[in-house]
Length: 400
Image (cartoon, rainbow, N blue to C red; front, side):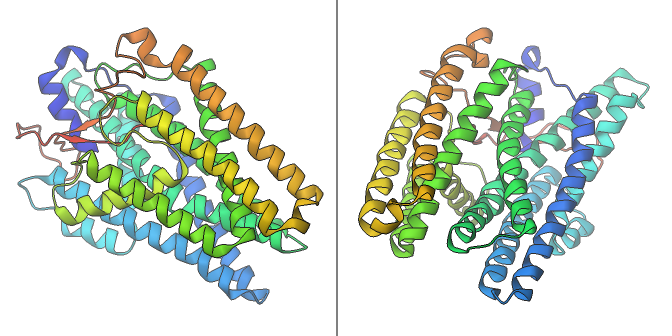
């Protein structure tokens, strides 16, 4: 995703406005610590499950960590290769990604250029502007990888922890910690990704602090909460129906990505992997996978979501009649319905009253043909070479 900035800068110089604030720098430092804490917590949880004689849960926890890491490293290294362009990518970059350290490399670049920007270590204005561009590019790439991690690792782990909470009489402090970390990670990474993406796009106004940010956060948080509780209920009732539903939604998401012909990656294999990741993300939340009008797709998505949620609640009454009589089901079902209602209401208010396009003239939800980021080349410090002209590789990116 960092590949888009130089192309935009050359063709739309009047619209190019990028910034990397001290707040971004501090949040990146905070992100390093939370990333390390997340790794430590995953290892602790896995160890505890094996210690308590439930290795299946431990294996599932570590599986989500490993498969998410492998996919993230693949995309990260591919982006580095694209950034290197005609120059060969340094072998040390490949080695670091093989050892699953690509995310640390990404954090390093954000901190490196973010520090230079905020300390204004470059004397020349042109060098400072280039450094600022690189800092925003690095931040946007990292934000995208964190978004992938959220839906490949944190969300499945949250579902697993909630299922364990429902099926076991007792729950330990480390399980509460895991649930809390997962909820925080999902909520924050989604809005952080949206804010970082809009900041990196030319002519795009960022999400304002205050009501716009809150309503976008409410929209994502409540719709995600409702849906996760719904599918946990389905998992508790029947694992086969749960699996079939997720597979159907995944296939539908991949087919949609194929239908709109996403062109994010240079190679066919990576493009297929990208569409598969998009399919997984679309299981949980709506993303505009290619620049297009948003109103119809998002309406269809949440109509289907509402019908499916209602179907799960009805199905639960048939599959678990005794469970329906419990206080737990009453609380969960009310939470599902209320959260979905608040989420959709927040969605309508956000796009109807607070979306940045309403103030900047970008277009509304009915017309966001330019709503997705367009990826072009970049050179942000992989080989440390000066800026050079390249043939643009215009590709689409996902946008909430």
